[in-house]
Image 1 (tube, helix red, strand yellow):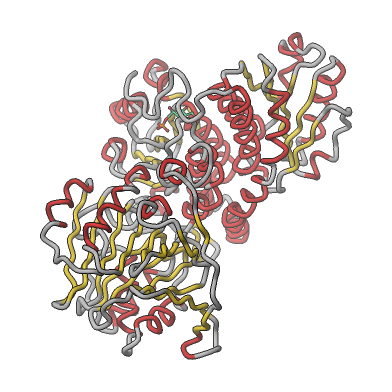
Image 2 (spheres, protein in one colour; image 1 turned 90 degrees about the vertical axis):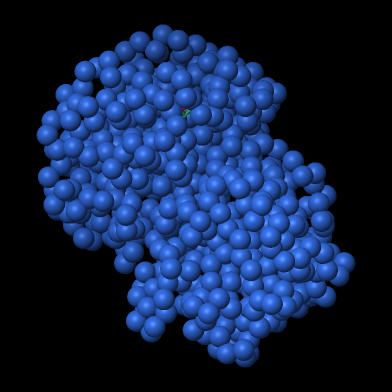
Length: 619
Ligand code: F6R
């Protein structure tokens, strides 16, 4: 995930910014850069790869008291020296770093180029530098404010201007940015751990705010249409917060474990996954990430979805979405089994490989097998930029979830679902299976997911209390129908891998075909009910469990849960209502939270569960 750092003061700014960037290494990145402003102008050093590769260049930068720096996690434009931040305008006077995604960068680029701007890269950030140049009339903060009004998307920006030494202008909209307060020096960072060794006093910028940071102090302005000069309104003194965290705790954003942090990052990750890909209400992929012409999409006969573990669970939902929305026969297969099943690959088959790491050997081997057997096209839904899988396939759709450090996958799963949903919706529209209105409505559903995920996170307190009881159990059953069955498959995996409790997921209708024999008084059953059409049937299965003395935890939308009649000990967990096709994105969050708190109750090593690794590079 991208990181921003800035420094103004009397010390060697380049060294401080480099050191601070190193403290963000754990978040993952593919390139980095630093710009220093001194009396002779702005000097920039940037490099693809690790910070160790940037280090020799940093030593050549002038020793001066002002610098901005960046670690990049590529979204627009491949990782390369030139695409790395900082980026500059035509004159080289305005230099900036940026986190997030500028959704309307294409339109702005066309307009600026028509106006005579020459751009050197495909990166959305470069457009921002040129836009600020267009607005600049001797006041950087005012130019940033004017530019910000035209920018759409999520962004945190730090800018310097050769003509305004000693000043960093920062802007935040839906992407974190904090100012660190020192004595005779001040700092800027996207994440507290970056600058924790230098200060413990912070000011957080809110969305729509501009910070002007100098050696002597910090001024914060709110961007408001039509009020004050340039619409900038000075924000009254804001009380700094004092952060009393050790660096390791700060890396976890104050959460006890990376897993919990990543669960809570899902609204932001989901927003990034759709950002710039749903335009004018419709799914429209960005250039170079979905290389299929409409003709190709119409020609498809079959889709295979391949993945392992959680990624396989995402494939199951993907199959469901592609068949329902696009009307193309689709099959989800465990990548580790694919080659042994001697798959039949009809003409014009698309193979979608799903993998957070992009390094899972079984998935790589399955893709190779599919190609050897004549797969027409291959597409990877992957989180890790530049991973091996991205080099094996024809097209890549990045999940943009940011680095997932906890072994148990959470935000990678939900962003995989959203990527697959976008693919299915686009295909469905192109093939005429869904109307323009239906495609727009579904696109809107996807755009609403971050908010729904936020709603699902409200279950945390209830799950924490419930975990005390579930943690005493040795067997837990999960049931659901349709997409709810697919969601509980992921829910049970979460519980078993981090709490070491034996858990099984069943299609609710299957209980009576065998598993019901295991339901004895007090056995916990987690039921998922997100689809009002299927809820009455699942509700009957819940009653079968109740009749045998089972203890039920029902996770679902209010409408579905209203159909249940439960006992005193049973628990209802209400999550936001959502289109049932994509409901696992929401319901799984409650199950992730339950798994987390149960594991915590049992005292397991949550981020590194026994016997498991984050990247499985053996067969
Ligand atoms: C479970 C989990 C694993 C991975 C699987 C595939 O929480 O993380 O099941 O999903 O090992 O990994 P990737 O997605 O990297 O191919």
